[in-house]
Image 1 (cartoon, one colour):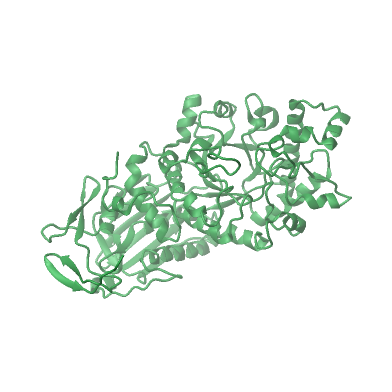
Image 2 (tube, one colour):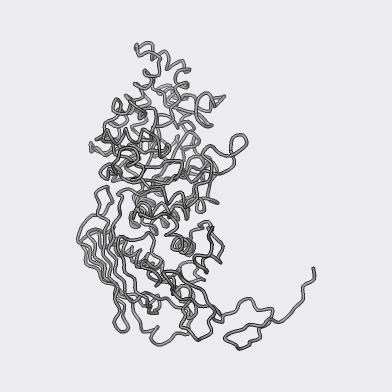
Length: 617
């Protein structure tokens, strides 16, 4: 193919302008404009006859919620904007103690998010060049934040509500925020940032001149699970996930750190765990990394919740104990073959119930994890997918079961598993200075029909449901007054829909869970279908899960986002409409996440973003 150098003609409001073919960009205003019609931005040619606005202006001001995500409890958003520069942001705070320093950090994050609206943002700044109109240069965004409470750590009892009032007088737009806690105020700053956009034609920012938002979440627990054992996920990638969670008002990062595949957590009293268990010396989370992530999440309104999965899902990292005569074999079936006989996926491994030294080491692990994630208000024990055949074909365990007259039946092993879990709970409590915190456990054989109250106490445990949304166990758990967190795989497993990683075909939980499926999955609806009641006192919320058999740094953003945002609106608002009513806001929010450095997956062609309501079946 031969390329010919030609000149191009650009038409603007009837005039002709010649531009050389070698030009890489053109900065003329778009020939298109937008008007808001029935809460939809309609694209039209800008002939100068009608008053049309830019796409971003229309997105901000069209409809009762503009492009706020997640949808607030109540909101009124004005239809006019004022232009300003990111350097013209001032603030005052009314707060007490450590809340004040947290607010300072949150406001700096807010200001950085404003910078990121610029298309050429890079490395912490953007090239704002103008020239600007005098009223743009003079306009100030002034923020006043009033936090009445002293709470600095999020818990299940944290009040995350806030009120936000935006008003404009002359050359000042005032944003007044009031909240009972730092976390509510932080959410208000996030909402305020979403009332701001880039003014495409004048290289400035713009904010709606009036808005009133009263907001609070429906569910206490709104989370993302990230597995960093099957494949290592870097600290920087985890930080991006926390950034995106903050943008979506999600409040719980459930960190599945270890598994049978690897043990990437460095423990100062047990360095051999990572030495034997990490994929490489570069793929390790050191104490400074963990503490940094815990604080990074806290100032973004996110608890970083540790999981140590046991008694199954252990293996690599435990081999060193066999070399220590004083310890012996603390994990059995490690990398045992054929794996199908001893675990749900390779590699295998379970704790050795017959060796009392296992509890000594488990207590040391809990000691360090509590210190790293302190203060903890929840702890995830894992506790699923135990393979009885592993234990029942391990000579040391079979001998121990027989010598103690426990028997070798399934119920006998479940009984010992239950005893293990109680000992684990006591060890965690001791590690936490004697203070009990609720434990979270996955649904498992211990929670199946007729089992749960034989082994677990509903005042001590929260059950996380990973089976399907119509699993009858849901109803039994609620009827027995267990608190629950939903992660049903038929809607909220984000690793589904890939080719198989063992064998051929598709992976076990296919098909892919589109954002629409994620959005429409209602915890209350599932509870009602099983019991006739939403059980708001027991249904704490939910999490979307990303297991990383087929994920790493190159894909974690696109697998989690923007589908995680669909989860966020479901858990924050629990809307009474399905995904269709949220689509235009969702598409724009995905664009916003990308501007914030999140490589969120494309949902539609850009044409759909610019032509609302026209991409439909």
